[in-house]
Image 1: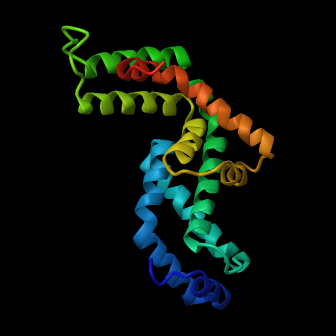
Image 2: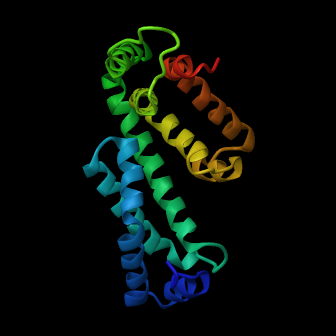
Image 3: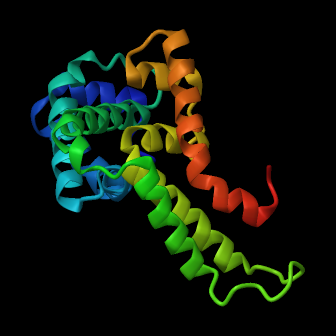
Length: 205
């Protein structure tokens, strides 16, 4: 977004009205799809993702006066989207907890899905598994993990895929540094059993 500099965005925030409205339209047009995909992957619902992104844009509008003109405005907006997504995950968790599969049920369903991906079974240990099959197994493992632990899967995706560091995760979770490190450790521990089939496939202990 070449025109969305920190200085020009801060000026639009100060001017308000149609100026900030213009920037938010630019953000949604050029980056909205990324925000929707991220929210939909965590919430497993496009409708819920739309609500999250729209709520986040309202928060950006309301908080734009606090943008100080330093740093990347898109990163600032993205953090608000992620905070709104975490809020949505936390709010829906108590109501849906009984509907979520147990780890045992999720792992059993995952094993059946992996078996289907790998059909027909390898004739010999030396038989090569295709890259496409490896990717399918990885997706199946992560999807099962995300169904059972949506908040942990979302945070782990931010760490692994997006490269967020502990300080950035701490800001999103609003926890102390120690509590943030512990939560990230919990994310990895909860994910490990779901990736057992993947580790076995690629030969990773």
